[in-house]
Figure 1 (tube, rainbow over the protein chains, first blue to last red):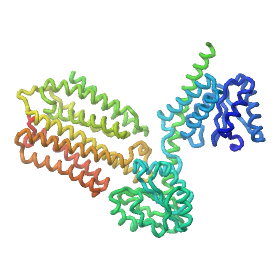
Figure 2: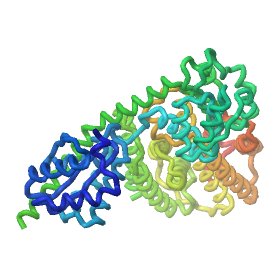
Figure 3: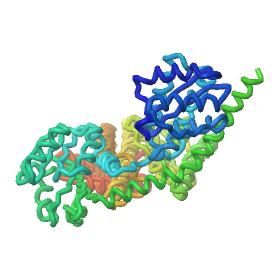
Length: 321
Length: 266
């Protein structure tokens, strides 16, 4: 359904042009992301606009798409919630604000915005900024990969000097490594029992493959180990790690154990400078962050309500004039 | 006027302390500009007090234990304003304010009317005392940073960190800050000792050896950290431990006649 409704950047201008031709429409901004397709229009006949917009979408997808609509003030509230990340699948995510800004910039460039739409979107950007800075709605990481990144950043600070080693080329370890890569880690080494698989993953993520028998030799150079092998017993043991720590010159070591059964002995965490997190720990932190975000929703909604009132006041004063 | 300045500065530090307690209770301790602004205002009021006090005593206002405590808290405040903003160390204000408040309150409670210094002091001895206290300001903040390091490390080691860990700075940044503050404090302390030596005033053997021991402890910690012979955990513990010893020495200098500074005996 989402794929059928989604509007690609290259089709945006044509759709906006057709929307502008609908009777009563004076301006429009269209937002299309992986999770939503929304039209913000300044119109004298909302129902007519909705009907015609549905036809425009139908002509593209050849299917009837169920739409919902809001009029002022609910539409204003909706945009403020969307821009603030309250209407996102992951509450408080910030990517949506960039997408709203991009949608507005496109409409503005294409000349389909009106003064009230301009004011509405500028106000939405301000609301999103206030919500983000004055509440904890964006605090904490909410996925395993981003929790791992956050923990790594709390241990090492900047990650640009960190080297990562992946033990076991699983999907989740690949995603975690990619999250770390997005924060600029220096290098990634992939080691797997099947060398070809390690080489394939290394090629995909721009890392270096290593034979599984040799991973212990590179241990001294790495700062973060992501382990997800299918080994039936622990491969990272106190006995193995303790002697190697002495040669690391007090550099901390972050071990992310994503394997079930565990790859790392829990006692490793007691070693000085070693921080061990397994999949349960990471999921627990993600859930905790999500809880914090949920608790903030009430505060965010009340802030948004104040801004909706302010905007409506401006709209009414404009109508009176 | 002096009292007003001191009341005002104590009020600002007390305000941060209370807001930190309230935030902790509500589990909403997060970085903000409040601590920075409040400490800035606290330091400004302390500066005003020190200027007024200096005019009355006709000397650097560090001649008594209460004055020393206020001067020390003023120095810690300055270092916080410089370091906290330069390295963007969130929550450092919340950790520093209680320490400043303790010194400031003790100083305030014990403060007696200023006594004008009849005979002029050697500038070297005044520089020695003032620089020593400024050095202690830097070393105090180093111990605050070390404490934050240990706190963040404990959070990360727990495998289930409390929400506060999101707002605490990275361990590595705290380690770097502690090291830099240590070297800065040690440099200032060395300069202070040179000033003391240049004053030509004889000092007791006990004071010399205690001062040397303190200087040596900080120096050893610094060298061991540089040579990576000490784990960051042990380094942070060492910094806090030596700071406690430094405080004992500092109190001794102002209260024990055997090792008292010439400025402290007025």
